[in-house]
Length: 223
Image (cartoon, rainbow, N blue to C red; front, side, top):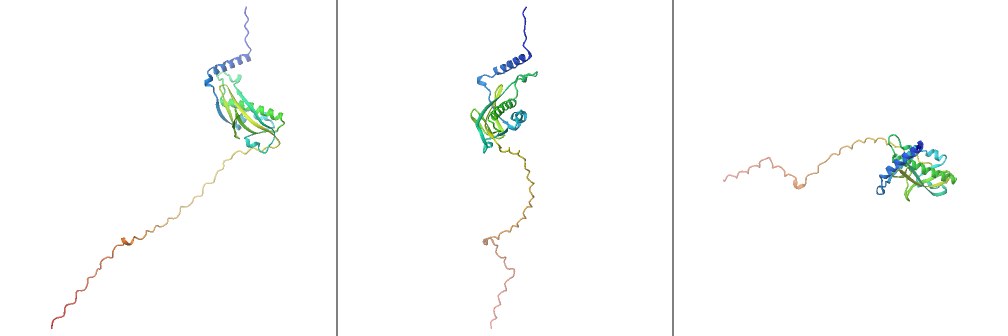
């Protein structure tokens, strides 16, 4: 009698995820390799990830200008974070692949984790001057990072400087300034228009006299 052994649930889930991933990958040949460039918001991504827990008491500053004047202990630390499709992403609704934004958030969290390990290893207190450095191409922005999403994973490459001591405070969020309404200005008084005198050659001649000339005096009578 032949005995059949069924894999445990985690093994079955892994097999399902791998099969789904292989099916999705088979539809994307080399000529159709997916590489979507995205500019993701740093504050929004920090809000939806475990970045605060990962950093602990480490300061994090994006933008190359934040490294000016800092006391650096290690320069140009480059890390590559990868966000992949996980087993728990396969659900009853046949949803296999998360969105590009979710994969980029996972890749960002992975990159920040590597930077935090490097900072603690160098006894640094801050990670400053963080910029995107995908395949050596620099993208320097204080509020956004560059992410490249593929068919099943996303990648975020960051370059940072590790510093000790106080760092420049984060700039405050921009507050819209409402200008007061403009003061109404009264329209200027109309300026009277004076017609220029007509040219001399256009002056009409004086009217003819209205009186009759006296008749000539009569001739004297002959003697």
